[in-house]
Image (cartoon, rainbow, N blue to C red; front, side, top):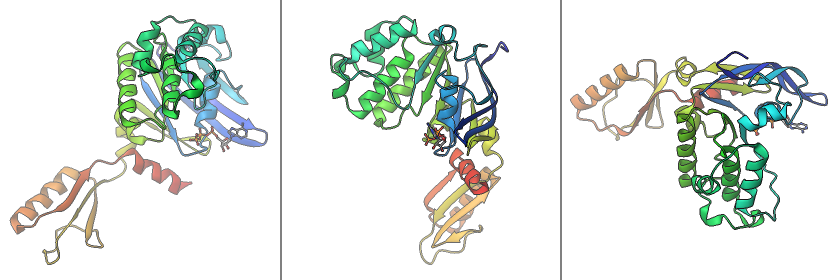
Length: 293
Ligand SMILES: Nc1ncnc2c1ncn2[C@@H]1O[C@H](COP(=O)(O)OP(=O)(O)OP(=O)(O)O)[C@@H](O)[C@H]1O
């Protein structure tokens, strides 16, 4: 293993019968980073992560976790926590017993009450799994993934179905774990979560990796946007892009164009209504992938 690579995926393919869900996929995750593996529905993210987690064999290619085969459970399992898309908890166990059991199986140690508190489950500790809401089950998944502060944490759509407070609490807990050195691999369809937190992003589409880099590297090839509206009778602004009375400007010089626009509005005594200006977002990069498909 390269010293600073926790996960090495090289030319991975995963097939279900004749269907190639993942094709010739390569990416490496460095120690301590948050790597977001993003992609459209069916892109192959979960299939890839299932191989990394040791739940699925490779069809071809090589995957190493901490320099080991992920199938080498005794070497890898104690160092890796996983929040899968679907959990397999026994319905009759209580929350506390579920976390305790999975924690014991992982071989890691932790203070059970601290973990339940971090996942916002203290008041549900004696509730049976069958009586939890969808969001509470998701928090239980998170609690088992972070039990014992593993070196590597895999979060497959961790915030799907969580309310805003639970999402904030989950990210605060992830930030704490990262401060202590945990490496995190994330999949999510909430692209702003990846935009805010990922050190690097891999964009998958139809089984292959289409783009990889920091958010800045991925977004700098696309223009930023300015939009605003004017009142009827206002003078024409010095920009192109009017549509239905609203103006949408695409620019590689966001600061300069915004400055010119504000300057014009001030001199003309015009109010720029619903003014929005911002850098390119991952959403925009995503849309170009679909268009290129
Ligand atoms: N057990 C299976 N048998 C056959 N095909 C499968 C199986 N699991 C997944 N697939 C197919 O493989 C492709 C990739 O699925 P996967 O779950 O890896 O995608 P994903 O990127 O995680 O998607 P999503 O964002 O929707 O969760 C999909 O077309 C899916 O239908």
